[in-house]
Amino acid sequence: MKLNMSANGGSAAGGKKIITRFAPSPTGYLHVGGLRTALYNFLFAKNQGGKFLLRIEDTDQAREVKGSDKQIIDILNKLGIKFDNSPIYQSKRLKTYQKYADQLIKNNGAYFCFCTPERLEEMRETQKQNKQAPKYDKTCCKLSDQEIKDNLDKKMPFVIRLNVPKDKTIKWDDLIREEVEFNSNDIDDQVLIKSDGFPTYHLANVIDDHEMEISHVLRGEEWLSSTPKHLLLYEAFDWEPPQFAHQSLLLNPDKSKLSKRQGDVSVQDYLDKGYLPESLINFLTTIGWTEESGSEQEVYNLKQLIEKFDIKRLGKSGAIFNLEKLDWLNGWYIRQMKLDDLIKLCQPYLKEIKDKELIAKIVKIEQERLKKIADISENIDFLYKDIKYKAELLIWKKSNREETLENLVKTEDFLMTLTDNDFTQTETLEKKIITWIKKNDYGVGDILWPMRVALSGEQNSPSPFEIAWVLGKEKTIERINQAQKLLK
Ligand code: GLU
Image 1 (cartoon, rainbow, N blue to C red):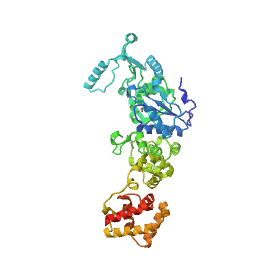
Image 2: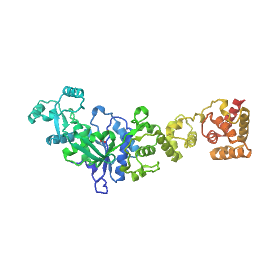
Image 3: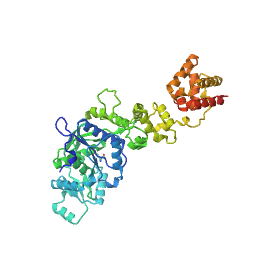
Image 4: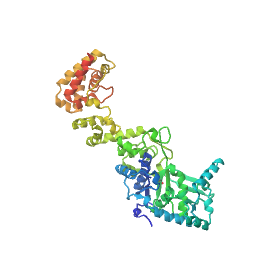
C-alpha cells in the first residue's frame, strides 16, 4: 500500500515524479541547519514542478519535546515554505514498520537478537581491549529457527537487527558528493526494531521514503554514514532507492561546526531579533549555493530561488554562517520595505513609546540604518527622553569652545526664523539650513556637528535634520539653548 499523499506528483523531464520531503525529529527548536535542509528540498521540488512533503520522525519518545512539531511547522509556514501534504507522524505507523520488519526476517535481511545488555557490554569491552571498532558480533544471527521460537515463547526481550552481509562494497552516486563508497565490513548490524517495539530511525525512514515515493533525499552530511545501511534495506526489500544528496555542514567563520556556544542556532531566535523571513531564506540558500560560477548576485527572493535552484550547484565544502552577510541582507530587505509595514514590525519593540506619530518618525529615520528590527529600540532614548552629555562633545575637532558657543547662538537665531511648517519634512529643513550655511560661508562641520550633538547628546546619531524633524521646532531650539548653557 502506498501512502496517498504522493499521488499525481510533478514529473521531471524524464517522466519520474519528483517528490522530496522534510523529516524533522521533534526534539526541540528548529535549527538553522534544519531550515536549510527544508529549504533545499523545497526549492528543488518546486523548481522541478514536484511535491514537497512533511514527515515527523517521532519514534524516539525519550527525546521528544512536546509541541516542537507544531513550532517547526509554524515557522516554516511563516517563511513561506509550504508542504503538499498534511504531516505524517511515524508514531502512528508502528504496525506498518512491524509488518515490514517481519518481511525482512523472512527474507534474511534482518534477524532477532536476544542478547542481554550485560552481554553486549562485555562484548564491547573485549572489542575495546582488542582495539576493534564496536560492532555486534552476529551471535544471534546463527540461532536456529527452533531456538528463536523457544526464546519468543519464553517471552525473552529482543531487538531486530539488520543482517549486514560481509565483504560487500556499497556505493552510490551522490548528487553533491559524486561517488561515495563504503565497505559493509565497517557497518554494524544496526538495530531496526527496539525492545519496546518501536522502529529506529533507519527502518522507519526507509519504509516511509519508499511509501511516500520520495524520489530525492537531500540531507545533511551527518547522515552520510547512515546511507549505506539504508541502501542495504532497499536491497533487502527489493525497492528502488531514491537519489541521495548530502549537503555540507554549516560552519562558523573559523570553520568549526556551527554551535550554540558561538551564537544562536535556533531559527525562532533569529525571527525574534527581527531578521526577516526573506533574508533568512536568501542567506541560508546562498551561503551554500551559487547560481553560476562567478555570479555576484546576492539578493534573491523565494520565487527567483525556485526558478534558479539547481542541486548541482550546491557546494561540497562547508557553508560559512557569516552573520555580517545576514545583517547586510537583512538591512537591504528592511530598506526596501514600505514605511507602514516596517512601522508595524517595529511596534512590538517600541512598547515604551505611546505616541504613534513619534514611533512613525523614529522608524522613518532609522530605516536606512537598521540591520534587524530589534535594533530599533537601541540608541533612540535621546529622541524622547532628556539628554545628558559632556560639553566637550559639542566642540568640532577644528573648533574651540568660544566658536562653538557662537555657532550655536547663530544656529538658534536662524532656526527661530523658520516656521513650524519648515519642520514637517527633513528635506525642507536640510535645504534651508544648508543654504543658510553656504550663504554665510560658514564651515559645514562647524555648524552641523554642535547642532547634532546638542540635539542627540551622542557621538554617533542620525543627521541633525532628521533629529530636528522628530523633535519639532520648540524642542529643537530648547536643546540648542541647553547646549549653549553647558558651554558658558
Ligand atoms: N529525522 C532525521 C533528522 O532529524 C531525518 C534525516 C533524514 O533526512 O533522513 O534530520
